Length: 375
Image 1: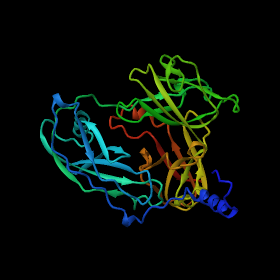
Image 2: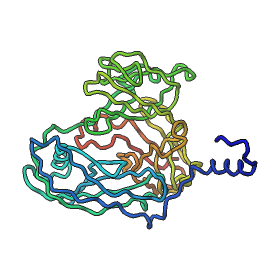
Image 3: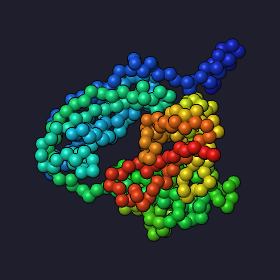
Image 4: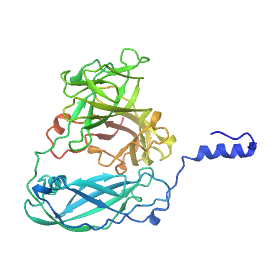
């Protein structure tokens, strides 16, 4: 912070103190936060001629009492079953009629009858991950019902894809390399957490590339902004990185963003509280396995989440966090819970069960965690 030379010492001291406190944000009391209101929507008729037409759902903005990063999740329900249709950081969500049709008629999902008119309903939730009591701050909207006329699904079931990250962090062996998972249906965007540390010289840069298969037949390298087939090795200072790759459909070009982290940590009442000082950092002993783990001697039991801390995430350690079902952790998910106390082992895996996921057309999140008593 730059001070004008005529500021008094007292004023400078006060401003310095203010800077130390700027990261402390406080939400309004949960009971004072208004639920989102989902706007009504016309009935939907899906026809082959209009499959590319967009469908947009809108809702009111939720004010949490400070400039929070609000995550909105749109759900669709039918005959007692419900599923999350999408997620947004704004007050709207848009998809094509084709995508909506394929989602609701999926026999492994809502199984809405094909080539019939059915009534389905929608609602939206809002949440902020940065509050310790996230359940109280998750707000649910009204439910709206509308009629939808469907057709047969237009595509074969989508299977979540993955790419490999071979390099000198693991011996340049694509078949054993860490992987990045596709973030959504045919998104061609892949993400994951990888230790990019030169295995031969930890003080030297880490060199790596991306391959589409567990071999070198199709690989990308060169510039991070414009990767090309068989391009030069990419290089970064050694460390832990959250990697985001976007490619074209045939994997002939792409770009990559790398954000360095100090650690993947556990935070919450289970590990002593939600303050930064209580982050319990996990460690990794096998780069290819993409597992980070640690044993806490004095686990108190209760709620917790996983998040990236330090490095590029120091200013906002809630930017990347995971919660929800331990078997399929999702970004910004609800707090996880454990009844275990005392000596407890926490672990999180970003590689996933590749053989199982390769056959699962429901496409669950590949990231999972375990919590178990330790001796």
